[in-house]
Image (cartoon, rainbow, N blue to C red):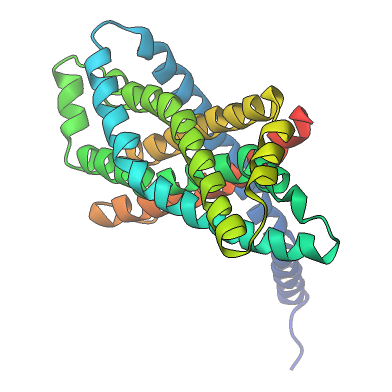
Length: 282
């Protein structure tokens, strides 16, 4: 039985349409991902600008001090612990590597510059993200899904000024201070492992630390700490503030996904921005 020509044409058109759809599917997914990324990047930039502008409003000092205690003071112990063992491991590994080339006297230089320029700002930011950043996202997210933020709007209280601005200001103040603490504890930890355990010369160690570290090294570390502070505070507050707009879930699950996204995205951006800032400062 012969199939009519119009039916054959329709079948051929359908097959071509299916083939074209399969061919264009990767490009449409890529385009949708790029547009979604650009949309969120622009929204986060506007979110940061509005919140930063409201830091200068009156009666913010008390809330900023409260957030400094939460983000900074309560992170001190974990920063000291991680800094101590990071320095000890770095001292051991560096000493074994330098002994092979007869340059164990450069232990202080290697450890000090590694901690002050790279490891100190990066690990401090990651630790604060894990301890305080996740809590900030969860707290703001719960306030969003429980309509507490809507209640602030109803009472003519600016949510950005009340919830976000103090956290950004506190992060900008706390990150450099905790980075400095991490660097100092890390250098002492390296002294313990390199001098006390491995037997390096104590005088040479501290002389190398003092002579090799310049003001530019410290300044570069502080610049990185400030950049990381803005990134972590913005990402964590943004994810919590807009947790109710997540398409894949809602309610308590949306808060959990927002918290996970905030931590992962903050850590990735910390490492990416570390490379960018390093290349600009060298």
